[in-house]
Image (cartoon, rainbow, N blue to C red; front, top):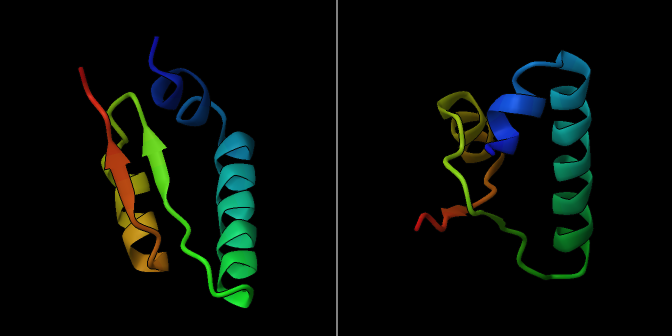
Amino acid sequence: LNWWFMTLQSDNTVELKFKQKMSEGLKIAQEHNATYELFSNTPIPENIKNWLTKKGIPFTEILH
């Protein structure tokens, strides 16, 4: 099952909450001079990749 397409893409409120949480996590990491990165074991949709790139959040897709 692909969480991105089944959950995030199907419900705009879930996508907004995801973006809010990722932004909060990035801010906390920056305040503590830490790194912040997203790892996914399923393909990340292009619109999410573009958003992460714009925010400066690196991401890695671990696809088997």
